[in-house]
Length: 102
Image (tube, rainbow, N blue to C red):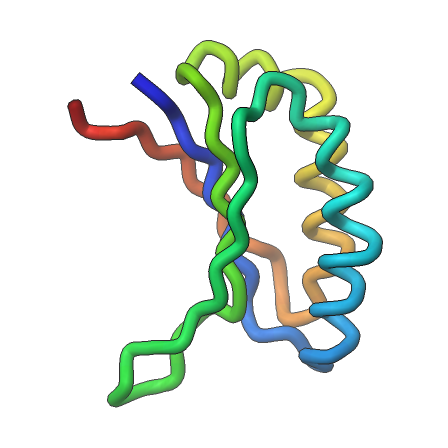
C-alpha cells in the first residue's frame, strides 16, 4: 500500500517569488533527499469557488510504503521538510501523511 507525504503551503506573501523559489530552489534541493520516493506531484489549489482556498500549493510525495516514508522522514526527509518551511513565507506548511485506501 503506497503512502503519501502531503506538504500544503499557505498563501505566500509574494506569489511570484514563492513560485520561483519552489521550482528553482526547493525541488532541486528536496528531490535528492527524498530517498525512496516514487513520484512528486505539485498541485495548485484553486477552490472552493465560494471562498478563498486555505492553501496555495500542495506537494504530493509518493512512497511505495509507509515504512519507506517513515525511514526517509527520520533521515534526509527532515532536511527537505525544513527547506520547505524556509521558503513558505505565508506561514508554516501543513504536513500530512496519508495512505491509499485499499
